[in-house]
Length: 111
Length: 114
Image (cartoon, rainbow over all chains, first blue to last red; front, side, top):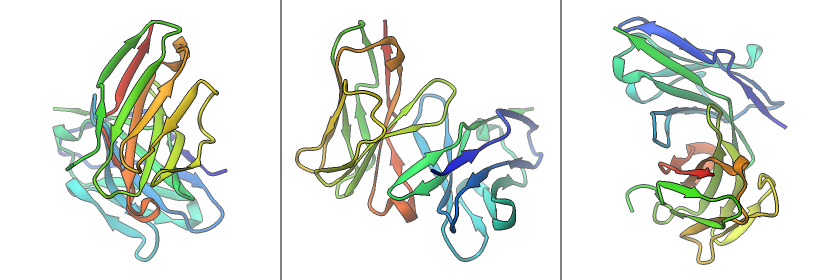
């Protein structure tokens, strides 16, 4: 079975600072990888996805992620964080038709 | 509709009561998923439908949980004889090609069993 690890339960960054959220996965072949964001009381919104091709993928809201096979990682980045980015972020890997989610990283943004 | 709609948004049930949670997916989406999200956790897979066929129900935690999608559109997740450990947010998601395009999620139903 596949699994996803998000090592950081929560992260605090200053508004305008850069952000990197870590994600490691376990899967034998090239995985389908996703990042979702969840604002309080809301469902999850897809930020970006990777399944082949260029290992640096661009998403919505200025986010990007880089797939590194050698490190089994798919870290999410943003060059300059806005206060509205405060939310819970979930990394996920596709397993057949279903998706396996990590436990999430909560992002706090300070002024 | 434009998005995935779930109802009710909140449900408080007394222990032992039966509940039914509704999901209205995006029109035309073939795949429909139910996930359970406990407080502070990521979503956990419950079950998957392709049209009206339930292809995977391996995540349903007990035989008290039952899901259906009789006409291949609206789905209902039913929990019988609710227990306190059933308290969670139940998320519905739909997609046409989930492996490649990901899901569109509803806002969820928060179930509290007292």
